[in-house]
Image (spheres, rainbow, N blue to C red):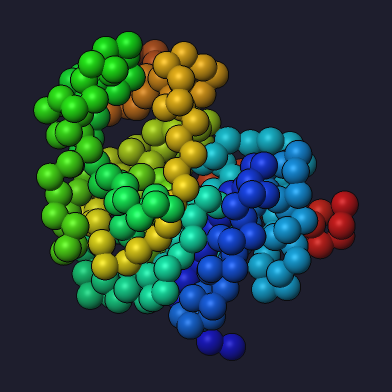
Length: 289
């Protein structure tokens, strides 16, 4: 049996509206590159898991309890066999040739640890997915009541890399977590996602750690993906999701933007725990429990 080149990991949580189109777009593209699809269902209340299970070629892992975004992706990655791994949001649709282009780019750029495709809204408008690392100005412009006045400010545009060229690959600080395409060596040198981030900012932290370990991060606009971009934390100034976003940003600041604080312990990623949990979930899924 030939080696799996690419593993695509998708985490679902009440995404029945999107997951079928996502998988349908993936299957022919994954076949062309000798890949596999792994869906981790985070105990959805809808038919997300049942929809994914309709496809014999898709491995479905069903949680016995709800877990954070990082832990779910780590569980999926612990079962990935591919030389490359793509963490993909369920509200996406792969356009023809996107996976081949991302693989070709990584093959030709061995110092790149992670890359990402160009993301589009269903309307065809380009999403500003490459980003600069956060700072005080970007936080004020995006996560405070002042954001309504700073949407078109230089602070916000700088963070969003609004002037980036969308015709050629470009080195960036980080990419939206909707499409994170990594080489397996990244997990060995940087580690998986930090499970201390329950939801949000885990993508920024992962890219930051890659840079710290001399990996580059690139935006590859030749590969194209439709992204419905639910962005639930952006819809209201104050909500449960906003609180989760701010909590994750506080963790990021403590990890990367402040000097070490005596007595302040920040947990590392529970990679071995993720492998154990994933194995349990696969067994339950196979047994139909």
